[in-house]
Length: 381
Image 1 (cartoon, one colour):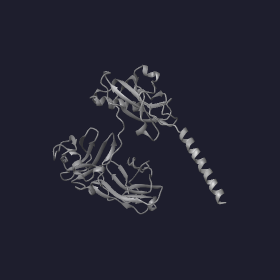
Image 2 (cartoon, rainbow, N blue to C red):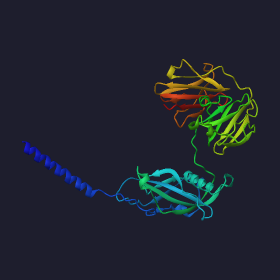
Image 3 (cartoon, rainbow, N blue to C red):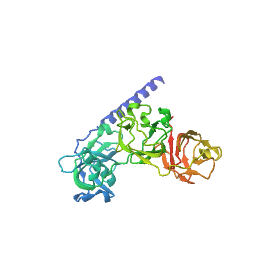
Image 4 (cartoon, rainbow, N blue to C red):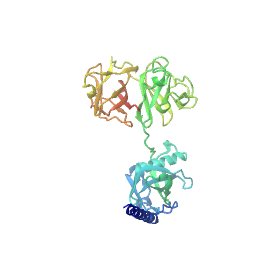
């Protein structure tokens, strides 16, 4: 019995060894092809000058690079720009990817963004657009999940295109005001979040009482004074100015009145806009109300600067719906057709608008009762 068991075990081991040997013999060997070793075919339309402003997309085709065996390959287009055909920008990638080399369709807006970035890199300014330029195109290919080890580029094709000034959309960051109004520390700054207006522009509207001195922190640098954004001359009361980050001085409000302070991060500039209405409606309270408290017990916010309200609150159940309201009454309330997320945290409030939807979790809530701006920011645990 024991001898039979030993023989059986030896037989199984021999079978396993033979199978493994066969696997090793048949295993393909990964080889990364050389750049330019597979062909990109330009669309027929590229024989003409392409008007990117009035085009929807371009579809490119390519051969599949030979990695030694068949595997999922990711294809992404890259573009470089030149006005004279001699001096070229660096390669600019696009967001669109595809696993089918016979139909790599790229939105014209992404190509326009890549060309714009390239021309700006070469010294062109926004006022000089629209521009006609030479464009190089190539494919960046790599095995799915192995970009660092298997990246390879096709040969290039060229065409001519015209585009307006089109930069890639800039995601909203979170910038906070620190200064005379909320306080000169990171904890106080968290209560005074700028309202994103798109295009890397942010605003804060209030009565800048006292001297209204302020600086600006991005969320990642809260409390780091060396990284605060502000002006070149400490105490400047200019209506417009340049924003700097190194050795920045505090900006001072032009007067103790109601203003919208606009911070343009893209152009690194700021503007003060005085409000026509210097006597906005006053509220004794602003609060949250919704299905999380049976539409009954309001969660009151704090007025941290004139007409700017703030509270931190945690929702302990899913499928939350809520609104903001004034004076614990429905006569004045704010809603929006909006589902809050980490990337969609701003909305324009609508009087009597839809219930706002939100998932379970802790959030910081902001409301400006002059502009009706709403911010709901998830708090990372």
